[in-house]
Length: 210
Image (cartoon, rainbow, N blue to C red; front, side, top):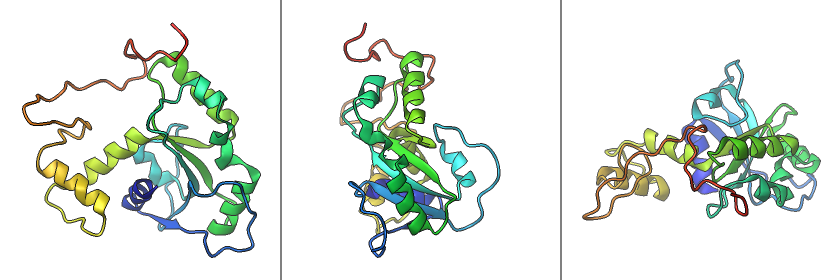
């Protein structure tokens, strides 16, 4: 949650809290929610369902739910078995977001670990998430790469322990070319892996299917 918050702050969003809002609906789970608003007017233009960092300038405000689940890749079977993923688009969540943001005009964003690269599974996963009424999905790998790209190895991010640690990893060459590849002493850098959806690795097969 803290890392996602800092990602949006680096992209010039104010991250709002809801603690002071007593007269809002009591929803079952608000611990994974963030409420964000851009300080300047958003630029016009379309925004893809799978968000890219360069598209954030077209979003004025949003309620964000973080369901990273880093041990899992979001295959259709996981999404079908996890209706909690649609929590961010529920009427109670939207009512809370409208109260915190002070406007009925906002997007709903779900942060997940990552989606399958296999076209069949990826398209089905996106179809299921759209079916929950979610406006946008943001993959954690995309978010992490954007933050790494923004950090200078010679900058000072001391107020944030997370950013300062990442800066030091870049400074001492433990992160190469912002590809999220970590090198240990005596170990060569791993080759870059393509993230194109039409070049899925052979092991990218949903559990229980060949």
